[in-house]
Each structure stands twice: as C-alpha cells, then as structure tokens.
Image 1: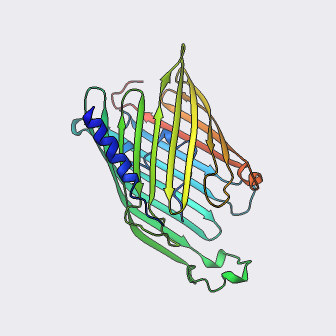
Image 2: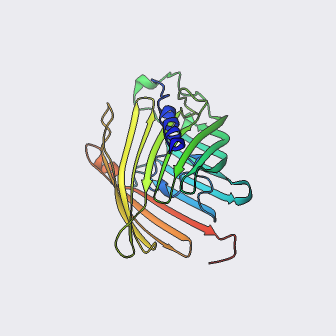
Length: 303
C-alpha cells in the first residue's frame, strides 16, 4: 500500500497548486458516465469502443439561453495498455458568444497490483472562441467601450492541454485533473485553468440492487463547486438518483438539486436529468434539461 499512498499524495499536491486567481468548463450533471472531457485519464475505462453524446439545454424558454453539447469516442488497446480517443464540446454561452473545444485524448494504464489500477492521461488539441458583437445588445451604458469585448466579429484558435490521473479498484475510483494547463487567466475567447478531484464508488446491495455514491470538487479562479450525490442501479438496467450542488461561493449562486433517471439495454444507455434550483434564480435553473446517449461497440463481436 506504500505505492497507493504515494499516488494519493500526488493527487492532492496537484490540487494544492491552485492559483489565487471566469469562462467556465461545461457544467454537466451526468458526466460521471464519461469523464473524458474533464479528465483524459478516464480514456479507455471500458473494453468497448465507447461513443458518448451529452446535450444540455439551460433555462429553457429564455431567449438566447446557454446550450451545450459533448461528443466523446474512446477505445482501449490492450496490447499497449492504453486508452485513445477524442473529445469535442460546444458551449453556446448566450448572445454573441460560443466556444468549441477539440482534443485528442490518451491514457496509459498501469497495474499497481492485482487490485489497483493507475491511469495517467493527457489531452491535447485546440480551443476555438467566437464572439460577434453585432448580436449583442448592450443595455448597460457602462459596458460601452469595454476593452475586454472585441469591436468586430472574431474567431480565435489557441492550443489547449489537459492532464489527469485516476486510481481505481473494483469498488471505487479516485480521480484528479487539471484542464487548460497553459491558461492562467480568462479571456473573452479562452477559459482559464480548472482543477478537479472526485471519488465514486459502486456498492453491491441486496439482490440485483447497487448504489453508486459520488462526491466531486471543482476550483477555478474564485469559484468553487461541490457535488454530492448517489445513483441506484437495478440489474444494471434501470437507474435513478439525486445530486446536490450546495452554494459555497462568496457571491450568491443558488443551490441545485439534480434528479436523474436512465436505462441501459444491450450496451445502449439513455439518461435524463432535470435541475431544480433554490434561491432567487430558481425560476431559471428549474427549466434546465440534460440528456445522455451512449453506445458500446463490443470489439470481440459478442452481445
């Protein structure tokens, strides 16, 4: 277990490198099913070729409300102990502003013992930021002449890199990652560095029931996000659960309760979640919907 203690120490040292310093990574409620766009170490965590789609519609019914989409395709290659794939995400953040992030992802899987697996992952690609000031109607006169907003329509490409680790056994997974490694501050076109740590577990219960509690933490700039929740699985066919995001920031950010339902059949997985907000903005957050759809292609030709 000495090796395990060393790895745990490395995880927490990574997260101790926070800058004292806000475009934000995608906030997705069902991401635990495919963590690749936040942690490349999760690449190839199944034996199938995994195709994963994730869509989020925030504040439905509000004009120009945010829209988000993710596509991940990953594969595990046993002879080189490696996972490979790509991740693509699109985030429309409202009027005039959107980002697209494209990355190739790679992970190396190292057996620490017959019980523990360590994965080291790297993501490399590009961030594409877009801003069109002609679509933006400024209501506050103080915003006129703001130097942070481009005066003309502009698209900016920039290199982008992620790094992450996961330590796992049959019952739990502990992960940590840093996204946008080279970005120490936010711009109109680029997100800044984000830090993540999470632990999830799969606990057998009576009969065909299993429970999967999860806790995760994200830090960027002065923003912190904690999620605590659990899913219940019946016969690996049906699942449902709740996730709580309490307000822990200096500025008011309403707490959220996320309700999730899903089904899995012959390697096809469908899930739906609904956000219920608490606080002054609950009328917005309560109209947020999220859908996942994934399919595992069995490389052995089985079912």
